[in-house]
Image 1 (cartoon, protein in one colour):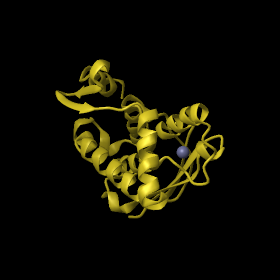
Image 2 (spheres, rainbow, N blue to C red; image 1 turned 90 degrees about the horizontal axis):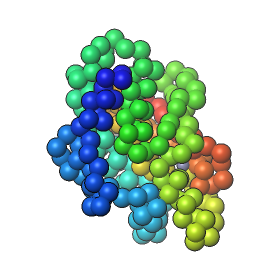
Image 3 (cartoon, rainbow, N blue to C red; image 1 turned 45 degrees about the horizontal axis):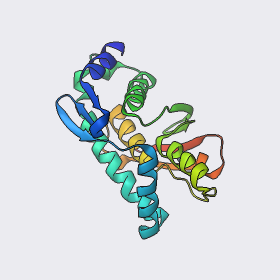
Image 4 (cartoon, helix red, strand yellow; image 1 turned 180 degrees about the vertical axis):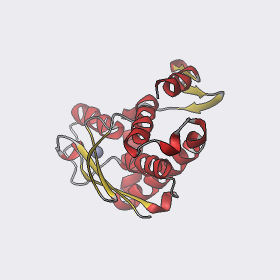
Length: 187
Ligand SMILES: [Zn+2]
């Protein structure tokens, strides 16, 4: 696992002046979470929270799934690795990509509960909330994390994205201590 992380770190160049990251030679733009938070709020205003979640979740899931598609072949012993080990590798990649730390809180059959103390969009929302006196939300906010988790479980379990459902049930933007995500994989 450490070897893989070193490889990813070696393949990553950050250019803060231009808000660009080069990942294995491919250049991608990045935004700070405070800025992204305001874009997401704008989308919610136009589409409504539920539809914004569906759209952002799907986009996040597809782009990360594509980026991780080679992982099972690139990582030696992937197929024989226990699921918690595969998830640990995927969650280490989350940290490097700046999504925030997530961990498995409970597993029950095909359902897994994931928690995060610093999911990316919640961090951005809370920073803005302090500055602009935004009040607490009545619905979860970490739409992108739902999508990233869908991609991670699809890659880990070797199933298409459509077989993974993720719902955020508690969110720090609503005043909860942790963001909680319920993941269900149907075989
Ligand atoms: Zn959240």
